Image (tube, rainbow, N blue to C red; front, side, top):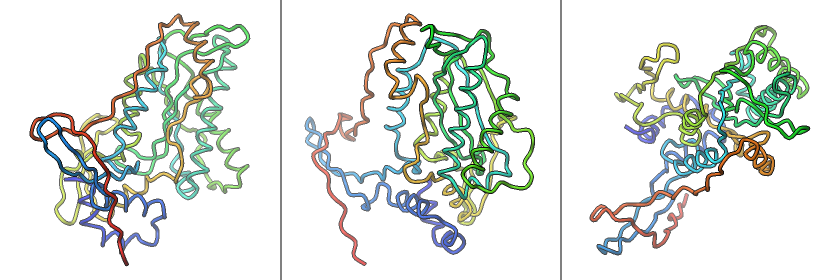
Length: 349
């Protein structure tokens, strides 16, 4: 079972129930997924020179909401991040919002997500600067997720943070000892204050009652690579894998997920049209960058990163650009050559 088959099966029912509340970005994502690897996006002409086979395959849509596309993009992102990894401990720090703010976030996505990023980064930088042991500037990589494991709307940002930073005055690396970065409750308190202030300054009306205590998680994740691999899985390939869809009876769709508390596999059943709406609510605003680097890990801070690597006495790995996936010949299993692109046929109303 594949997501695009479910989209086709329940499209009419989805339009009946959700047409008035579906945004332009969501319609665009839906149209792309429906047309992925069909005549809608044209074809690629292929040839195998060793065995003289030739043929065509349909092109992918390339939309980041599509669970069949962007694998190569995610692989390249992971390779770039691996090239920045330092020989230090890493932490995953997760900033979220209480459920009372989720409606406001959904109605003002581009602005709200941007302010979430800025507030979380400002919080981490403030703690690193004021910490007596560190007194440094951090580098960090943040990735926005908008879904829980059950695919409910739950915006949060994961940051991969090295356990140390650069003190520019002394040109030295300051590291954190032990498996501890910052107190979670203190991070949550400062983050809450910064984000609420930013929301008010931008004219967003806050709910009447907000909880005084928010939640920020700060977990030691070893050398950082496992956390990066985890984030890359959900970066460019939609919010659900085809293998997680376990049943479709023509009325309801059932998918499985891993419970975050018990780690047990559980299932969730929804009407087909509701399942489509559940997926589309996680479509990001057009042009919004889900993954961002900050501090000495930012793309414009390469000289600073080189200084950090020098201070840590690193032997710099030679960056190898990941090889793009190729088509395999069904006859001889050799690598196929692309001989041309066939544009889609024009559609007339």
